[in-house]
Amino acid sequence: MLLTGTVVVDAETVLDDGAVVVDGDEIEAVGPAADVVDRYPEHARRAFDVVCPGFVQTHVHSVQSPGRGLADDTDLFEWLDDHILPIEAGMTADELALASTLSYVELLAHGTTCCVDHLSVAHSERAFEAAGEMGIRGVLGKVLMDRNAPEGLREDTEVALAESERLIQRYHGAFDDRLRYAVTPRFTPTCSESCLRGARELTDRYDGVRIHTHASEHASVIDDVTEERGMGDVEWLHEVGLTGEDVVLAHVILTDERERELLAQTGTHVTYCPSSNMKVGAGIAPIVDYLDRGINVALGNDGAPANNTLDPLAEMRQATLLQKVAHENPRTLPAETVFRMATRNGARAAGFDRVGRLEAGWKADLVGLRTDTSRGVPLHDVHSYLVYAATGSDVVFAMVDGRVVVEDGDVTTVRTDEVYRRAREAFEGRSWGDG
Ligand SMILES: [Zn+2]
Image: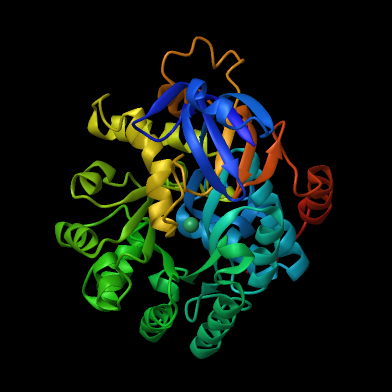
């Protein structure tokens, strides 16, 4: 396939009249259309207004889509204990498959081609199967909770780690290495020291497995960890081995100087989730300071009940606006920086080497967008358009690993009307118990 349009190679480079050639699962060539098009006369031609790398979100909860709109305007622990955990505990395997499918539809249709996905305690294989069939790239993991968790979610430590290992053996590298595994402790309050140390030990036994957890999201977490361990949340994670180049930490809002140094020294990745942080009133992560220290910062929508959309373009906009407010400085986080966070930085955090920019030899993960809308005219600067003006509805096409997964704005790998009908039937009016 040969795609033409304004080609956004990455945060630095734009080809106004460019072309991208895809062969199999890889990009074969990228360049000015005048140089490229004639060399590939046999390739099917597709023209888009904008072609750019697929967006990468390094903190989502695909299983939480049934809770969208059920837990608004509450603080974090009420949100979690009264709403989200009962849903996760009460979900059947079929419901979890449907919930994840619904999230993958939303992610793909809005241009997210790769996600790091925090699943639930049970039925994780159903999310892997859904992601595999639907064509999204991802690093998924079953959640570990061996204490301070409700009935239905709390597991014996050894059972939880053994189930994680079984899933690693089955799915890490599955679907042509499009899916990989992240060992996924929920967060330190729900995981014993042996669970956290076991997570590191398990990860080290398999090449390329990642660790994904929440960190320093809320003052009450810091208070609890400090009382129990005598240190902050990131410091405690470091103490038990859960920092490093294979670790992706979500939120990371409340950190002190020593913890920030630890994040930088260990190469730990941070996922900034501005909409979620604003919605639960958690605070503003010190993203500019992290970037200044060389910490790799990516973006995430978090789960549907915490946002309440999984639109990567909306998240880019929130990401910069919130930092401009925090710093009272409109120059903070320019569009190019945010675009890099949502593409290449995300792929680095997820551990995919050749994802996140359009370059020959890299994976064919890309999206096509329209600009023939009131938001897209006039188009002076395409990074500005993508970060400040466009929404996920402007995505008309997406490809992952060279496979077309979105056409005319709709996901092609599943019947979306059927997914919506089944999700309405299953989740509207569903009672999840009191947790
Ligand atoms: Zn989360």
